Image (cartoon, rainbow, N blue to C red; front, side, top):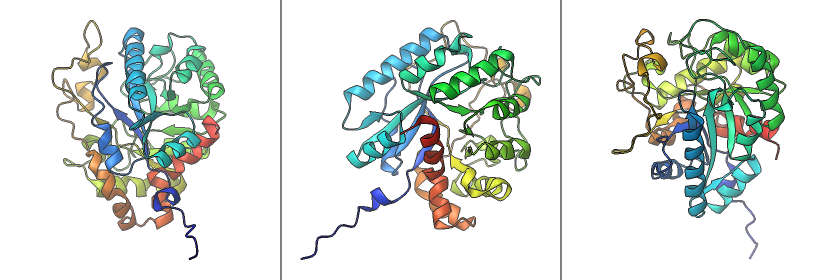
Amino acid sequence: MTQDLTPPLQATRPLRWDAHACLPLHPDASFAPLQRYAAQGVDYVSINVGMDMNPVEQVMAVIAGFRARLGAEPERYALVGTVAEIEAARAAGVLAIGFDLEGALPLLERPEMVALYRSLGVNQIHFAYNRNNSVAGGCHDSEQGLTALGHRMVEAVNAAGLLMDCSHTGRRSTLDIMAASSAPVIFSHANPAALVEHGRNITDEQIQACAATGGVVCINGISAFLGSAQPAADDLARHAAYVADLAGATHVGMGLDVCFSEPGLDDDPPGGLDRGYWWPASAGYGQGLAQIRYAPVETWGEIQAALRRAGFSAAEAGGVMGGHMARVARQVWGG
């Protein structure tokens, strides 16, 4: 009998990569929602561990708690920092996890903090969460470019091998970041403003500048940014097709930005939070985020077919679902 040397299907398909998701920002947050990604064949998920409104003591407690949880369940999860480690996790049948930071305030205006976070499992970062800070401008604030400190932070991110993310960041700052970065830049969860006009969405100029770095725009699944009250795979595919037509299919990915809550778990920053400041009513949020609807994790099972209906080839659809982010991460992370 001839030995069958055909590799299993899982090993031959492109990696499936969700560039951004949010568990409650509490060290005791349940990891049960992550199993929904594994059930949909997702190989890697980037999990938020803090935003600009979260003080460092909360961010560090979350990182410590999440690291401990991941280490206690090696049969389910692997904390990774290279694409090779993601591929090894997939081969072992476990879900690969990385962390991301949303904003520069947790860096305490110290560029050397970037490498510290990288050593703790933070694989990507953006510099502003909706509002301006000493590093960069936010997308829901007055226009501000990248500051002198911001330029040093870009250098630190490039040197430490983190993915430089421009989500939630103001237009001028994103263009400055993309001009300054020596490595590809991504939007981990952002949609084209040409389809839905919203401060969180990005212009054609930003999309093309991202592609010019060799980077990827990852489409998110939030109702207000997709222009759909009940976001579904075809909505994601429509936005993906716009980016592909404008900048090329090799610059499109997925970052659904699903945010999970847990009853009885308070994950607000110590001392409270001015929700009207971080999510201003003028941007359509009201005084909170209750009206936002997310494309559920299970949408992952429908994305490939939706991309094909939108005109992507099978190979292009595979790239959008993860191959393109894996390409960029190999270049930025090494390995």
